[in-house]
Length: 288
Image (cartoon, rainbow, N blue to C red; front, side, top):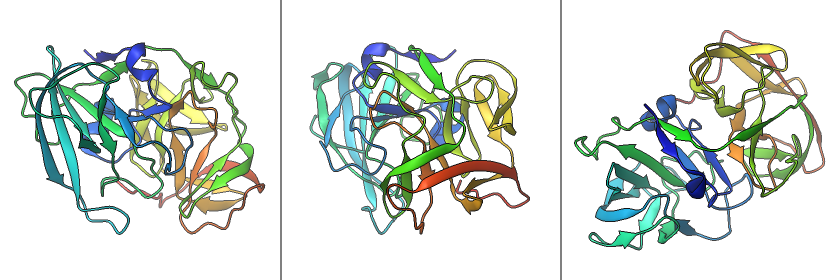
């Protein structure tokens, strides 16, 4: 049975994603990335990390991370006893010590970048929950998580304009958030389910809502669900008929919500008109 993520926890953050990562804990939605800052590119705003859990800090430690030119080769792990579970929290330089008692929303420390991040990923708090008897250090063993909120599914036809760019990404102005800050939204599949994850640059993602069967976007089947878990079909993402790496999908109450293109080496400029489409391929881009 999935562990609920209460509304009081999620409401602290601008965005969240259960699936948008190639790492083991995000397989089948057993971890959540929580983004305090607004915007869909690497943030330059506040580095404060509000706690997603209440309990007693058990341990803080520095751990190794994959070496990347834009991030140090270490990260930080914070373990918290919540009573029912042990929380594993990553990507936060600790401002707490073992024995400290914390509440939801208390400052844990400062957000950091680590080699676990792709270059287009914003700083965030990574959360997993485990049964007390599970090894808290190994990569697998966390429990499935279930947001206790309604996420509105936004229809999108693939048309938009570029509103923000970085070296590896471009953010679009559609689909537009109908009530910024008030509720969470996500891009809808053709079946009306909110899509989550890296389409299709990671092997799998999610379609929120428990229902088995095919799931599609822009009239093209993108995968098959088992519950909410999706194995993506072999597809390529096209912008103006040219292939890119993928789409980064999340749930957001962020006013800057819009589709995010993953496109290292792109030549997009703010104001460019974009048409996004999908087509089958024998050689899909897979980053993990």
